[in-house]
Image (cartoon, rainbow, N blue to C red; front, top):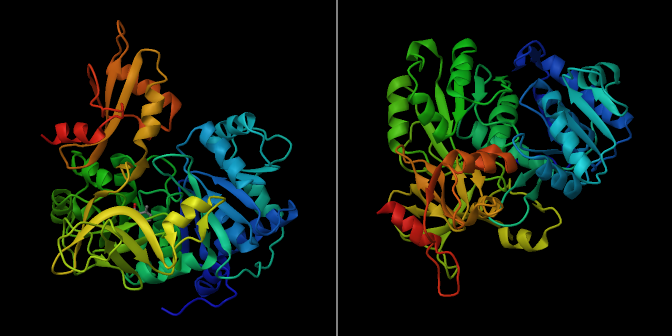
Amino acid sequence: ASPPPTEFNFAQHLIASNATRPEKTALIDDAGSLSYGQLTEQIRRFAGGLKALGLKREERVLLLMHDSNDWVVAFLGSLYAGVVPVAVNTLLTPDDYAFMLRNSRAQAALVSAALLPTLQAAMDLAKTEVRHLVVSRPTGALRQGQFNMADFVAQNPATLPASTLADEPAFWLYSSGSTGQPKGTVHSQGNLYWTAELYGKGVLALRESDVVFSAAKLFFAYGLGNALTFPLSAGASVVLMAERPTPQATFKRLVEHQPTVFYGAPTGYGGMLAQPDLPAKNAVALRLCSSAGEALPRDIAERWSSHFGCDIIDGIGSTEMLHVFLSNRPGDVRYGTTGKPVPGYEVQLRSEDGSVLSGHDEIGDLFIQGPSSALMYWNNREKSRDTFQGVWTKSGDKYTRDADGYYTYAGRNDDMLKVSGIYVSPFEVESTLVQHTAILEAAVIGKQDTDGLTKTKAFIVLKQGQSLSEAEVKAFVKERLAPYKYPRFIEFVAELPKTATGKIQRFRLRDLEKA
Ligand code: 3SK
């Protein structure tokens, strides 16, 4: 693919490339659909609205919305105006959003009505710079400084695109680490273009006739590419769903909207296969499925392919690289592996001393080189330097490469766990557990369930004379952290294995689980 021009605005690029299909359906959400012509108009008017509010280029706006047509308009309308959307996970707590509002210095927030109380709680916790709220589908009266998104789009004049550069900061996503606060990962206008060219077109070969549906939400880098960047770059249609991607909610979309391409994560595929109401092959129209977020167990992949007669293309990406850089591909699928580098990206496996491993079947740290890497972590020089090392980006994953060039996942090189495709820091869960008055200490590790998928397990030492049920422990964590972080398995133990200096030996707990 040829590079984007120096002056480049991704939203304007999508508008220009879809100018010949104004009547074609671009987006279908729970409330209705938008054609490419309507989407273009809404993007331009939304950008006009941001200007009318006095938002300046490069200022940040928090985007906290459930997947919907409005999400896409808000994201692309911001890009079009040169305003920087900070797209955040809808499952977090007021504390998390308070940090993100302060860290990004967001001047406005674009929010779904259902998430407004949580956002309001975050704004009550912290002094923020938010001056305006644009609320998608409000259910009640709005206060001063709050705008109904439908009116905002209808009443503001369409504007021209900001003359942005391909390399300039365009949007942020937050990336979590095992310790410390999440890192604002700053991506450029050009990075969206590159992921669409290299993976969306190069690997998935999306076409105009495709209807796509992603169980992974738009606020994840994976979902953003799946359900926005790639289909809109190909003139395809996108099905968007606000609710949680339960098996039944997913089946409903697969049957009602007949998507040809479905994107999921291994936990979701495993969950769907276990349902008695799994749709029959001829009730759906799937031609291709993709998976990322965690390594796809071979058994799940084989059962899905034999039921639906279509491959699952398993790959790995990262928030830092914006999308998938290592992947199986249609016609070349080797289940149990993550495939080969996506053309346009180069990967290296490095030993602990930093030397590049050129043989096969040796475990090494994965590094990636490619045109979609983030510009930096916001206001975090130390972590930026550690991750973005010149042209190479450190992934934090360990991999092996076999003699045929296929890569296989071999774990993380930090303590992070990936549960249902989302990072969970064991330290954050442990420090929440020990806030309980009955808990003396706790250690959290990953444990494989019967499908071979990682879930969190907490080992808990209670204070003398105290008792606690598993349900109470789970409820305690769910009340304090994003609900997906609660431990699925709990074991009460008399003591934790420790080093002579008192450090918890998580590896011994991991070994116990494997035994
Ligand atoms: O988890 C992944 O493999 C992934 C894939 C695409 C984009 C982002 C991520 C984290």
